[in-house]
Image (tube, rainbow, N blue to C red; front, side, top):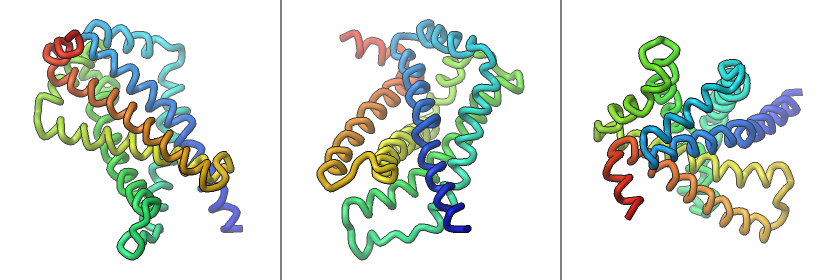
Length: 216
């Protein structure tokens, strides 16, 4: 009975990491990427997102609850897992360890980021139209900029590498060749999503400098 429950929890944990959490991560990065076009373009996208009917209910059911489950069960997996990197050092063994480490970092980062942004809006301390200014104030602090960069890279790596594991565990990539190709594909996804996120962060931190660099 316990084995069946553990199997179900692992499958659900894996599925939620891709859908809906992975989908939300991409949409969130894409929305933030509009910051590279300036404050007005970014706030326009924020207004569209906030204008979705029943947006608060959608966020709770399809974003926050899945993240909560994925994060809590992920911590259980991380602290139960036995890493053999020191003994073997195989590429996948290293990726296995990094998946657990980035999972913990990502959970800490998301908790802090939600508190600094979404919760401040819920508490009435900031309006959606003030998100660009809020992020600018946060990221002009060098320590917070580094923290956000580490958190972003952890999140994108955790998703991309988790996508590889998802394809294996759900029988999508069967055999060494398919899994090798999947490794390259997920690496490209990691690079592209990271680049999109980093450009957004630097746009919030130095909007004029980034806009000028992109125009050139």
